[in-house]
Length: 148
Image 1: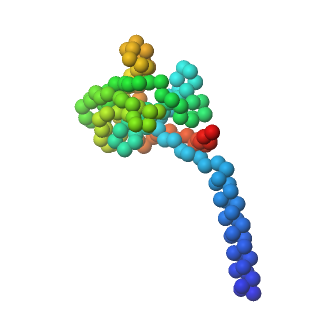
Image 2: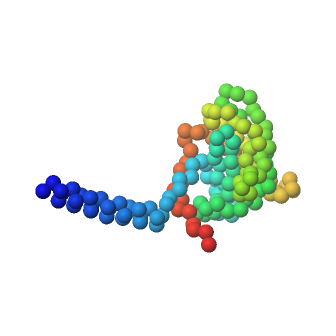
Image 3: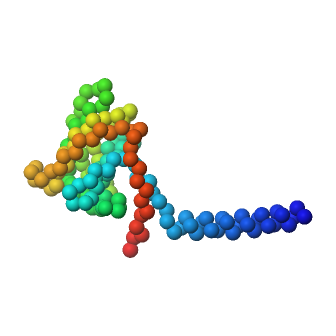
């Protein structure tokens, strides 16, 4: 009697496990954390802290990464209870994002004024004012598109 119950349980667990594995293959969601600012061309600027660096990425309307139109930037960081720091923003190694060149120490509760430039022209820029709090970042679930 016990062997029948165990064999039925074993068969059920194998079938249920294969169904879960197939469901995971269909759609893996990725959670993006940070702040999302809508731009005039229906894209988003995604700002997040990766370790001790602030990273800026461009996302399309479906929150998929797109090529960055910004080439450089400058930002002023005002950590809570500390003095202001001014630092440059440079392209990172992946070519799709920009990253602060100096480290920003924790806790990440900051007032950040960012100006991002398109190309070498100082007239074509966008300004963002961010109240960054590491405890209240936004989360967006994204299903990555398969590469062709």
